[in-house]
Length: 340
Image 1 (spheres, rainbow, N blue to C red):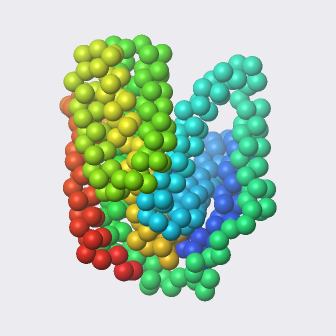
Image 2 (image 1 turned 90 degrees about the vertical axis):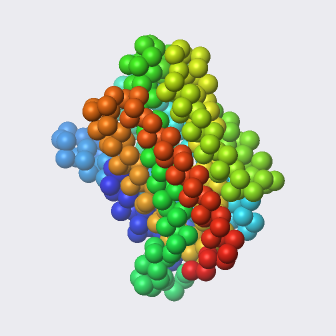
């Protein structure tokens, strides 16, 4: 699924700039619905693999197109970041509430009916997208391949991409290993670890609501720098925690730190490359996804050799890399190195 999402991110950005957001959003919604239909009726593992690939392509289309659309609807950089932060709240709703909903309905309805309900919910936005008015395509005549390659080599695009590489890696590390760390290292029960993980997602959602207002008044680079330090402090508190209370403080600090980095960086990218936002967002998401795919693997390998506590210090190093890369991005953007 992640590999299919990576490919879709690279290709759908130029398609969004060429044909507009509507077609990409409609196609993404229908592909996700088709993937769920195949999963619900799958009798062989190959069918599950095919549906996972479709889910990656459709999910990548929705992720990229929704973010670039929200960025395009606002002209002022701070408003872009603020709106993208608010958009991120709804991603958090899915991450926080859908697993609990499925868990509560599974015994009563069974898996297949739940998947069919999810299919309907996934296909419904396609109808809404067809009825709404959208901004015209930015590159109606198409974007030359050489221009796309030049954007992929642009210093600011690369710096922003690798900043999100480390941020995405951190999000996958914390989301994937925190429950294991809490149960194995601190002896917290599985249910207790689940509540702490829910607190992590909840803190992200609350912080994004706050940042959707704060980013209208505070410079985005300052927010990213402080967020990286906050997240690093949270990871350190979690790794040094001796009880559930200190671990909860660490988890909440991590959520508060993570909340604004992604939307703020995307808002900056949308401002610096307004005429090619779809293509640039696709490049950024692709680089970020590589981080999300490789960083958890690296942490797993290190955990096997040195223990999970030592392995999760990688997240602290990632926060410091985000801090340093943001300083470089701020310096280059102030010098006017944003010309595509």
